Length: 420
Image: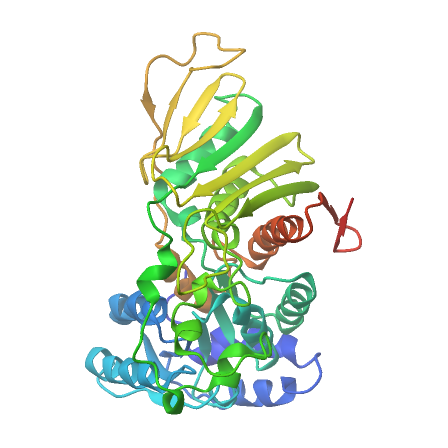
């Protein structure tokens, strides 16, 4: 895998494809041709919260020398967060990143080659679509989208532009997950019947994001809400957006998207055929008036003949587990990056699996580093655009079932979700 291509080289494929699209494509192609001989990858950060700075920018810092990358621009609706991110960039990269008032301004900047999207859930698809139309490669957090229309627009724009997209479902970059996929492909556990995750907690995670110091004059309310609400400025609604349904639909697209992507990867599944989902606010009712469910249970049926179940209960933290049940045994994914398999429960166990066995890890580049390398090589990253499509479809199916109380179906040919 080449690490010596110039920035002109790694952007060439994306820029050339962009020429075929309308609007900003010509400007994108022109910008790529004018980059010069410096091969440093210049990254813009869209979203400067804990994930944006603590994970995305930190990853750029951690790999700065090996991958020759730096953060040169930042944007966030909350100016306090943007300014802190710019200061952190100066500490880590030797110069302060330029603060842009809007993601639109950052994407128009000629000195930005690629972007990392760590904005709230309801912004991901909009930011990804805009990045594609600007000819910028993108690392996009999950869920990639929260609605089918926006998902299709972002997906199609990225495909048309030829940009390299890495989705933030990083579990598939873990050596244990890669080893588990190899184990399943080898047929060691036989045919899969069911995959399930129970991920409980004693308190919803959105409480930890409550900030009372957000001032109206420091926040671009319209840039944050993107038309999702007609409510006036509310600092709590902004800071703890994870807990409000306008901006986040709760544990399934938040935590469940990681689980779904992991199962899709290990078991080789595509999009589900049907889904049912129930839930509600059972425990956490207080002055914050959070509207995201603190209990939820979703079940999907896949055309491969597999049932997948995800459940969260924030009324009791006991019982967490992640496992894949197959005809010769079970793959246990509870211990972080050390999966274990046994013959327990296998209806066709044949003595080939004895005792408790550790899955042999398969090493490959860390998730962020993988994206950096693919920007230079043009190869497909670990969690490509298609993976984002698949987990997003599954999550949207669950949310629509939860909203309507009806079973949802995915029509792959028409790329649409219907309800029974």
